[in-house]
Image (cartoon, rainbow, N blue to C red; front, side, top):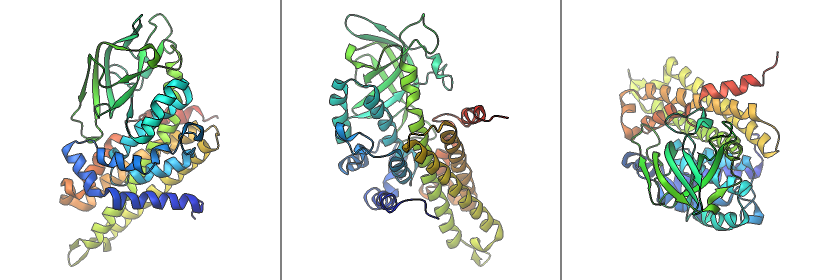
Length: 379
């Protein structure tokens, strides 16, 4: 059964055609191998107007739904989750500006974002605070000249690209409680005294993830997002959107992994017949497709509930948990089906597998998602 409306199905197929004909798998592979940010593709998506999707109409956007956005993320991740990351991390902060920004901030940042002139990134984690994000130690001191920031951030995706504004979680009040002393500042990545280093990670090679060193970095007072001390609420507000988006992207990438493995199984001849004819391979592919379909339904349920503004923390965590572990599982099985060929980057499965290994860590680990789900379970 197809749960999509005609309009949603048309949008889903539009994104799929765009990825196939305007971007292509070879381009995504090239960016991954060279560890190059996909600027050309980013500009194409911006020109297509898709960065306007979630921005409200009164602020120049299309006022689209989270469900439509999830369908876009599913399609953009077809040839690799990392590629979709470039667009998703920008959107999360753009929506924080929509919700918490001043009118001046919205007028300054949102049109430039929708045109593709600027990008956004989010900096939460530090060497000593990952899942325990509220343990942030990077300090921001309010001075007459502005906010002076000192510390170190880690795992900030996309921060090393050109024209990036980083939404940075900092501790502005050392005397306040753990969660109450946090603030979000908008920090341009070309600000003096900021040192951003792209890390040689196994996954997320093109969009990149970074470590950031801040040595009394000064940003203007007006770069405060929301209110000082309200940073935890601002940062956690976008997690629902983030986890729906990444879960949809995991599904998109997982489906391509299954499709690639299926194609190879029909083409690879061993013992005078395609390996698909062996029951072991058939059953493996059947399990892979079943898992992807189940993950997709969980994502669609969460996205639909979020679009209707229904409380869906449990459903979002279920979608993120299952979709991430599905991507990890089916890409590992895809590696097994392709055998030695899977070890070559040109097979693409090697890239999908690397992204699958990252999937259960980034955006909230599988263990964190299980904790969230368990809290909703009553005897």
